[in-house]
Image (cartoon, rainbow, N blue to C red; front, side, top):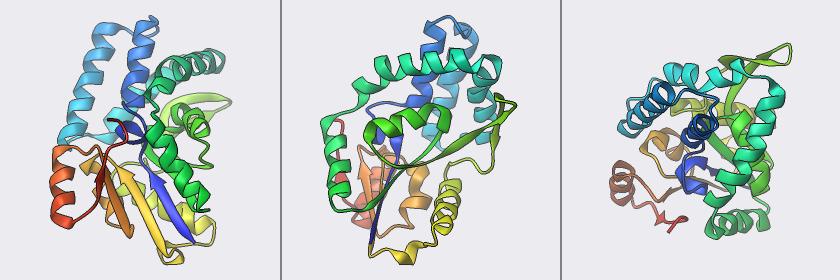
Length: 221
């Protein structure tokens, strides 16, 4: 039995679904451009530096979910996936997933981006398991807060291990395990698998991968 884990943004996707979702809502006039686009850019730069405060970011990112009806959100999400996400999916990413699925590997996307945005993307890839930050709900509406541990940095390890435990599995259950990612923020999870793979990596992850002898590949070139 083997395990294949995939980061989403800038790994399977040639772009960042979290960042682009805010840009999409700004373009539709749902969010104020001056306020939300500036903060969106600031959080992206923090992430790239490894300085992201995940609690502050989630308060920002999940606010539009709480401020709008589920009917409107679902309509916008379908439009967003069709117009913005599908063009970000390259054939190399689809082929990589098919390779693991043809080998009957257990496949999962592991992403910090919230599950409202990423669930339809996961279905588009045909991947059965999604480990993502969960936006809390009450009486059918989003609260604007996250539920449980955000799927970010060390939180990804905790969430994956809880998911494996729920199936009666652990790291030692697998002959081989893979995690594909572009970001040094994912080093905690990459160090847990037997086969970490740097995909279109940032400069810090690229240097680490070369030093550690990890394979480096591009899905988006």
